[in-house]
Amino acid sequence: DVKVTQSSRYLVKRTGEKVFLECVQDMDHENMFWYRQDPGLGLRLIYFSYDVKMKEKGDIPEGYSVSREKKERFSLILESASTNQTSMYLCASSSPAVDTQYFGPGTRLTVL
Amino acid sequence: RKEVEQDPGPFNVPEGATVAFNCTYSNSASQSFFWYRQDCRKEPKLLMSVYSSGNEDGRFTAQLNRASQYISLLIRDSKLSDSATYLCAVNMRGYSSASKIIFGSGTRLSIRP
Image 1: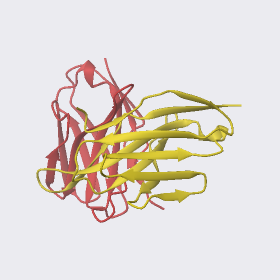
Image 2 (image 1 turned 60 degrees about the vertical axis):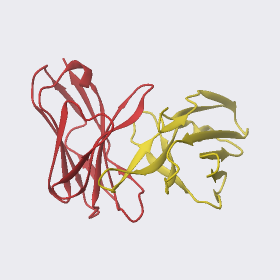
Image 3 (image 1 turned 90 degrees about the vertical axis):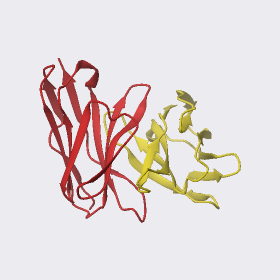
């Protein structure tokens, strides 16, 4: 069974803290994605990675960076968390041959 | 113009009704199209892929209209358990030519007894 896991379901951080969100998939997928989901705005792509150490900006990369050192793991980094980064963060993976995305359960991040 | 647009709803229909959603996309080069279902406080899950010839899965029918650049989802004989948010998704090529998936903002469906 396909599995994407995220390091935390809920996270509370303070403004200015560095935040790491981790995502691991066990399907040997080349592509991995980070989205944020906000009411009325849907899923917005932050960054994606199509291979180890390869990444590309999505629609809203400002304030975020990513790291993909191993194929199964894709990390999202908030260098200095701000209150407007309070959101639900969803990780997904896919095979480039199929494009179907499999999502993790999400991390609800609150920045105080 | 947004890359992928959906009517946000909410759609509130009685059990047994037929309901249809549309989703428009801006990139004519898109090749893959999907409908996802998202339950409250859960992650999106694939409902069905959308093929050029249209496809059906039980009470669900998906269609693609390339000329007008939209995809549609039809739900027949709706059940209470169909209540959810339905997201359309379309692939687009990034600068690296890798495929990225862009989602619509979702259409909320509520089925009433």
